[in-house]
Image (cartoon, rainbow, N blue to C red; front, top):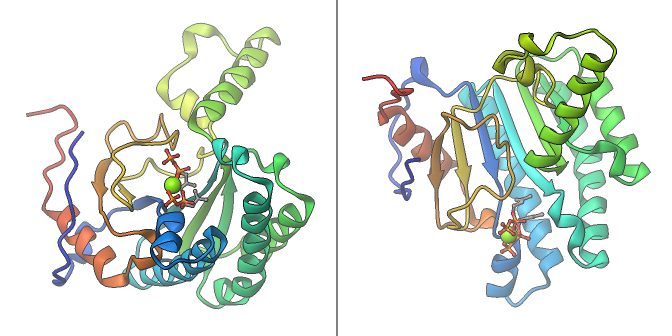
Amino acid sequence: MSFSKSSSTRTDLDVTKLPLHVAIIMDGNGRWAKQHLLSRIKGHEKGAQTVRTIVKTCRETGIAHLTLYAFSTENWQRPKKEVDALMSLLVKFLESEHKDMIDKNIRLNAIGQIERLPEAVQRALDKTMTLTKKNDGMHLNLALSYGGRSEIVQMVRQIALKIKEGKIDPDLITSELISKHLYTSTIPDPDLLIRTSGEMRISNFLLWQIAYTEIFVTDTLWPDFTKEEFLSIIKDYQKRERRFGKV
Ligand code: IPE
Ligand code: IPE
Ligand code: MG
């Protein structure tokens, strides 16, 4: 894996070499709040504003797929007050943004254990996904109660069941078949994975899909992440040589 730190200089992008799919681990809301002597919840509220900025930037740049890690399967272990606040924030975000998503031709999709989310969140998701289902300007995927391992577990269960029912021959299990049974079946693998807040780890995100993804870690905390820094990371990505194991 190759990691690098970001520089904040902005230069023009080569629109012919844009990543088709950008995935982001939006980390650092809690640290941002601590720095500003605020509650963690205030940090998440500020983080939601960055989500708006980055969605808008991706749409304007012409990124086809954006996947945001908003809540992991492990995040259920946080204090109930924080989990509840994150869920309310999500409903608020969907309600305030759905009109804009329609106007900007953005299609919303959710990946993860959606059935574990509170009903209000599921309703808001359903509503926004229905309202935006014909949009094709950009695909915005929210990873919610998402975990790469649980995604793999549900994929194995689905395939095992099909084998048991005689619908699949085990000899016909291929990488493509596995990909088709993941939450991301209709989305290409990410070309670029960005993590904010400096942690050099994957935290159970898109384990199968990032086999050949370019990784970029910035020390910037998610609430401080800007359009300019995002564009400078895309520029850095465009300079990378992707070899896919070849020479
Ligand atoms: C990311 O920020 C948001 C979620 C995981 C929901 P954190 O809440 O993890 O912020 P830090 O890592 O404590 O700074
Ligand atoms: C990863 O951040 C999950 C999301 C951004 C939703 P965490 O803050 O939960 O990850 P760890 O605990 O630092 O690995
Ligand atoms: Mg964190």
